[in-house]
Image (cartoon, rainbow, N blue to C red):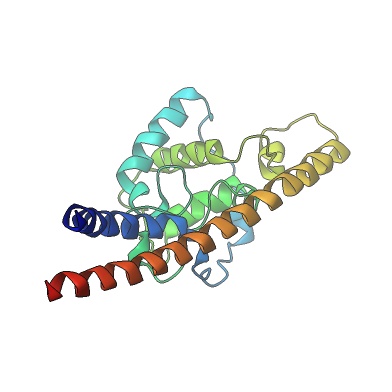
Length: 205
């Protein structure tokens, strides 16, 4: 009766190990500060951020960005585990507060390990990516940059209130996720120990 159980554990271990990179995506250190020239940061989009632009940007994201940054921009793509630094969280307020021009410039210029897309994508396609990135923000969050770029009529006080609410809402979520990751690591350690014991037991038979 022990053989099926052992085989099940040996099968599940690789599956669980593959799930770790996604859980630990934000545990890696951030890269060095990526300063954007003031002129580039102030640049405005050449296209309208409408449904068509977002749809086109989504396709471009799947082709060029998803493998590192993940489907939802959480930095948990299939290649993220091989990169020494965090691939970032595009849903975070920190990223969403970056100006459209800054995002466009970073996509255009690139920085190792991220390549430059200046020759691979047209200006319009890079703006479409920016349009799609704006849809990755956490539900309920308000980007100060998006408000400025779209000339929102909201008062600064309302925008500040929204930002404070967003910070309050994401704090507990981050701690909860961190706790889950810690528990997962402990479970994996215990599982590894159990598998080793079962291997030894199996070899003795």
